[in-house]
Image (cartoon, rainbow, N blue to C red; front, side):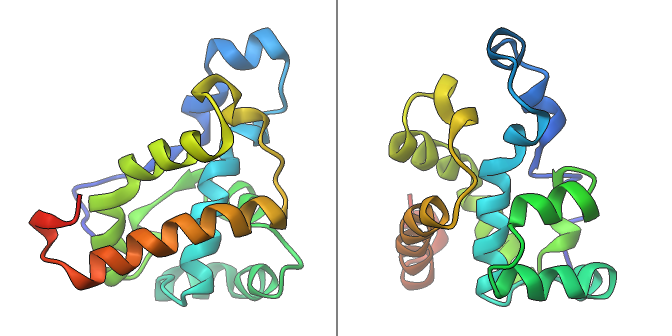
Length: 149
């Protein structure tokens, strides 16, 4: 069962409320691109929760088929938030220990933090960050949690 004490891992509201958005006049959905890539990785691994499957099963399958992006799913079905309730137990254990590092990995791969909101929501970019997440996942699987990072 997901950690009910943790309300959310990330929220697009936080990102599109930053000065970067107002200065660059970016669309609000750009604040969810990084979260969408992460959720897509979770879905591709089959680590979504039963609740997410029940609430957005068709959308989950569309993401897996690359007919819809994880960002679109977040914006439409998850109130623009990456939530523990959307992930299964295994994904939540990994996400609790990795998500902050994921933001660092994302910025390192795509550029400065100020530029992260301009990353194109494309399958090419998803594939790039998914390779990074997959390496972190492998490390997480092979080491005790206190030695992973």
